[in-house]
Length: 472
Image 1 (tube, rainbow, N blue to C red):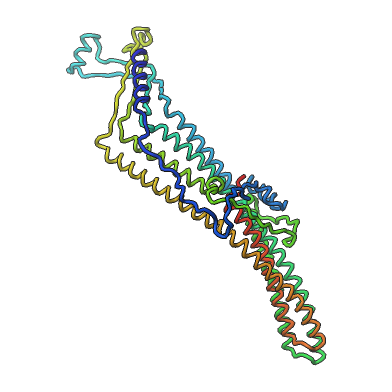
Image 2 (image 1 turned 90 degrees about the horizontal axis):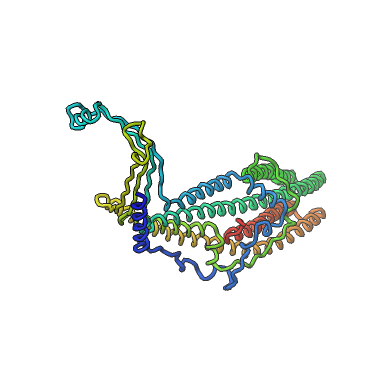
């Protein structure tokens, strides 16, 4: 029997070697999916990018680094993504055993009681003098399918692409979490700055109200001036609890990102002390496929779709399967393991071609082809989104810088206007409405300036993430 098995296996390997071929041609990643350059960026062939920086080198504020470290270690979504990677790795490891024959051990015992009038029953009585027959078997069975059409190879390729894709999904999630943590922290600093502005403005309103009251006592203004001044002071006072509320909500949001229960967040730096970086190294659009995890994931999805097409196409062709059994068999337990009399063996090999279910198999192949075409379109769409996000971030970085320049000048002008209006009002050369209007304008402009600074820092973060930075 051993010689028979050797001959059949050798024959199968020879057939596999001679006719093994790719039954489907893979679709490559479309090269024309990328533009030559990003909008709002100078034409350059420089492939260096800020996305190549590790996030600990991109962010320099220690508070942000501590928060991100906590998020990477404790964020529940990231831990779920890690478990998905482990599951995909198990599947890939399992797929490596596709070419290995299946070998099973078996032990069987059965008894049969044919009728006395049956042919078997009559012969059984004559031969053994009994009305039943027992059968005892023990041995091993083997089953193996030759990978003639690359079906098993494609299964391994698809499982490997799925494993790599699960890693890219985690990377993409990490880039988003890091960006969200930094955005949340910058927003927290902006709220702190706006709270300080509101408190200072409240003191200024209180000082103005005291001056108006003195002028009222001197008969220089009416009670309307006091009422309007009090109303403006209350408007500044109302901002304080609103900003304190927003600070607590933002701290709670950062707590969720960092995997902790709601608590206050340490701030050792002011918003005004953070320098806005002007990052110019962005690289070329085609580099997004290696740097940006969601684009890489879309590319791997195409590889998986290619593998599925190969698998379903192979199902349309004949499958070569070899089976074998061997062991000991006897109708009496006393002679069950008598060697060599109880030995038995069977070997079979054959080609199986789907006929009646051919339509179903071909439909599955057509679906796989359509899924692959969809994967190509999804890749193109992901590239469009990525390039658009980079372009959006670039224009924000540029235009916010211009807005900050104008707003800084506006704040300086209003600060001088406050000094002049107070001096003129004390000397009776200006109306109280001019003082109140100047104070209201200054409050609004200073709040806007803090928000512009936050937007600039966020725009840099958005550019870093859009280019694929944050997962290293």
